[in-house]
Image 1 (cartoon, helix red, strand yellow):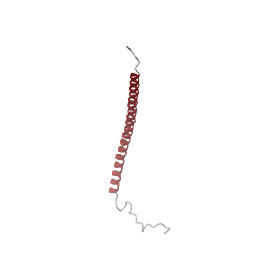
Image 2: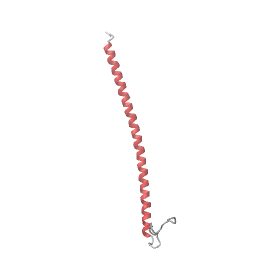
Image 3: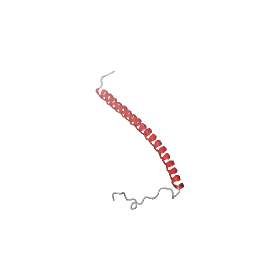
Image 4: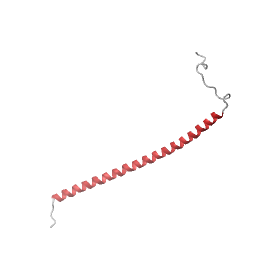
Length: 90
């Protein structure tokens, strides 16, 4: 006895819509996850590059400090005095 039951058809359609909705939600979540993973990878690259730049700048600063400390105070750069070093237009 295979009778046509409208209620079964409605339930099957509702189930199909629900399944399609769940499938679309899973696809959306997978796409969001992929975008987040790419963003994290890019941020990781930026952080690594910035860390390398910071280390280079720290080494350069240490060299500058060593050069300044090793200079003869008499032969070095004289301190700047605003009042004594007035430009000629004053």
